Length: 90
Image (cartoon, rainbow, N blue to C red):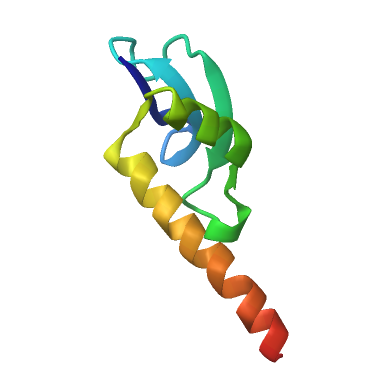
């Protein structure tokens, strides 16, 4: 089964994650199929990146997002939905 999950990078106590498409039985930081985004928990959520086109493709062919990736995507959706309305009212 193919999954969309976080792959940890960075140094000790300074995690930085790549959002990757990976075989479900592979190691957390093992060989991945495709990197589709980045997430740094030490920075604002607006700086997280996800290639929406590739994410849509992989979800369309049956890839399952992990709980942590789903949480990041929900938060990104909230941030992107709030940003235009805040700019329009300012």
